[in-house]
Length: 441
Image (cartoon, rainbow, N blue to C red):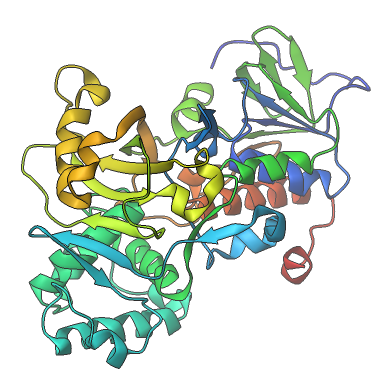
């Protein structure tokens, strides 16, 4: 850490009670919780936009989400910290489409009865195999979370292999589905995390706000008092009683919460754990009409060797028409994996990806307009076993850290970590912390 004089001094009237470094989901959730208890907070964001990996932008009337993340209606923290009605959560169609061996097959709504799903056609084995899979989803949906967290922990891949499901069922649905939900094509993620993800999938619906994922950080920011959020302020060092900034001097506070990504946090506090990451590359294409006419997640179960993995694709304009200009369709396709792209980088891979999209969607994909690509090499913190679901957020009295790298690598995890950090601050500053029932209200 750079050497600075952090001798405790008298706070100026303009100094906040708490400085939060970073205006991503965790930082904004922390600030909302703290200001709601009457503390003054300054959220310092180095860039000129909020949201972190949940940010988005518009391009020629198309709404592009940066991170390619999906929400789930079963995420309890969404209802705890957000006003869901204005977000207009738009659900994906129940179930998924799986492309395998040149054909698309539907795996129905996991909340349907096993008998109903057993009658569905597809690559998942016999009717008995499909009924067993549906029953497994049903059992998972009703299993309490604490019981899931006591199961023996291994990788998701090993857990699937050990559960006695037919290989056709595993390879035809579960591997591509988990790969898409975890951004982990090799399924090296903790089996406990995978069970929680599948449980949420079985209980809820995948969804996005009508205005894109960026609507989540926007709502959190809109609930902050005027003057709380400061953009374009880069923090160069932190301590328990304040921060130094590159161009705005020193800001003194009673507590500091570091709410950046894991790599940035470790630069400010050497010694913090930095996990591995799963890269996520999202390609955006425009078409004159939707190739599916429904917002269903299309999974690619065929994995060509030696190339980045086309994980899943979604017609976002079928989810909500505001994602594209009138008369146009927006298709987002996610590629996973650490293999190097050919010369030309992610954009140079687009012609090869397009040929694969022709297999998935049909010949019309050859005429789609390539809009842009978004490559995030450190998009999702890896969660290999053993995974600590609650890494400490309190480093010492006055200094805290939060983010999805402290909980789970999801929107749910980021919001939970922000709440935990706020609760730790409130306890140390001796501000009453609300009961869980009050917080949920």
